[in-house]
Length: 203
Image (cartoon, rainbow, N blue to C red; front, side):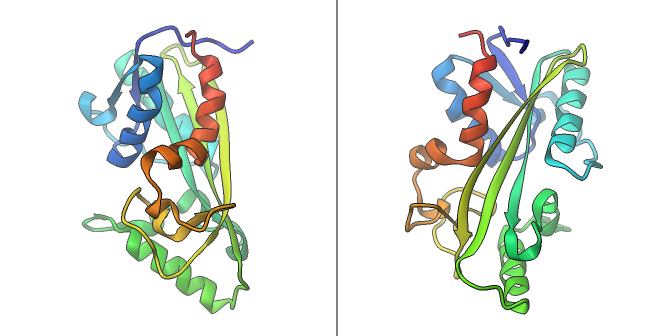
């Protein structure tokens, strides 16, 4: 039996401003106020798992335990078939620099690795998202979503975040980076997981 969320404020266990903004848009129709990890001065826990669900659980439970509030975390990434699913759970790691995350660098690396293995076109890929809703008592619920597509080069568009300018979803001729918020939020991997998550809200 799925546990229902009955509150009106939810902590999103992320320091990523882009993800937080997406969540604000997604939760607005439900009348739920969203706060981020930075609002509570939470440290970023070390993500030591090798799966999306494992890392999402680390973040959600750490935030719920530290604040006494129900917390929602997201672990997401892009899986490229020709790279055996890489970068996958290491998507953010590919973008890490001494000065923060540089996704142009990460996308360039991905393109270069595809060229190195002479990957055929279309270059099938998917965004995957795992949402974990955790309560301070240690209970959690897991919701998974994905969106299929292909990688394009050069990058196109300046909207979105992460790999969005390189990802062209199935059935579209534009990238997530060229797509407006409303359209992306309707079809994204996070929207897919979010649609399943809504069932856990007592609304």
